[in-house]
Structure formats: C-alpha cells, structure tokens
Image (tube, rainbow, N blue to C red; front, side, top):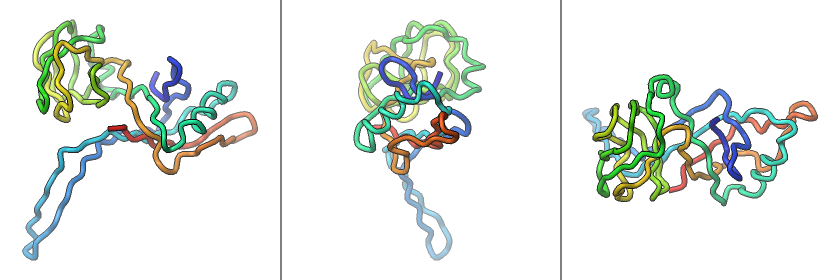
Length: 197
C-alpha cells in the first residue's frame, strides 16, 4: 500500500492519476545557427503528484497531518513502485545488503534471492536519498543505480520492495486543512510531494 506514512502506517493511499517525476536541472541554449547546447547538473530529486483516496472515518489522521506538517516540516511516504516492476520482480527478501563508494553508479548486492528488475525504487539505511535500479539483477551481484550515490554504503541494508520510505515536503498548492466532497467524505484532491534532500 503506497501513500502518506505516519505512525507506522499509511494514513492516506495514493490514487490515480499518479505521477512520479525525476527532476534534474538542465540548461539549454540555441545558437544563431540553431545548434543546441545542453548542460545537466548532478542534482536530482523525485517528485510525486497524486490524488489521495477519499476518506471518511479515518480522515482525522490526514487532516491533523496536513495541518501539522504544512509546507515546512518533512513527512514520509511509501514510494509507489512501477506496476511493471511489481509484476516482474521475484525477489522476496528486503532488506538485502549493498556496498558501493561515494559517487558510484553501481552497488554490489548480497543476500538477494530473486529478480530486482530495472526501474525498481530503492533506498539505503544510512541515507535519505531514494534511488532507482537501471539494470536487472537476479541473485547477488552488481546493480546499476541512478542517480550516483550521495553516501558510501558498506554492507548497508538496501530496501527495494514495498518498504521504500521517502522523506519529502508537501509542495505549494497542497491543501493545508480539509476539503469535503459530500459532507462525510474528505477529499483533498491532488497533492504534490518533493523529496527532501
């Protein structure tokens, strides 16, 4: 179950439509001869934009959460895995351990018993950043990741199933209270969450 995570449980599930976007600063310019120059920065963050499942009797937890966190405090979400990843994966053990150096785009995984498919979101226990697998891995071995490691990992737990928790902020425009659609059903509409770096 993917959504806003608080007090050890998901208090509001993500609902369609849902977008997970990789935000990377890119600067482009065209010369007079229309030749294009592009520069990409190393910075990267994940952004989630999603509707939330309308709530009735559990609405008070989300209402209090929205008001308390506002736009200034971090919150946690269970990161939604790609549907293709869910259908393809055969790995059942999480966390596994991983080793990789600062700035690397590969980690060596140990303790894996199945397939971790390309496109899987993952997170290491010693850092706040969420990464994505850019190659398939069956069993133990080398897994390519994006973006490059922000902290070194050495035998560190790596989460990769439905247990990847991302720390983020509510983005501007998110309702900071409650909105009811029919008197008893709270529906705040779309929320945008940006990864806290």
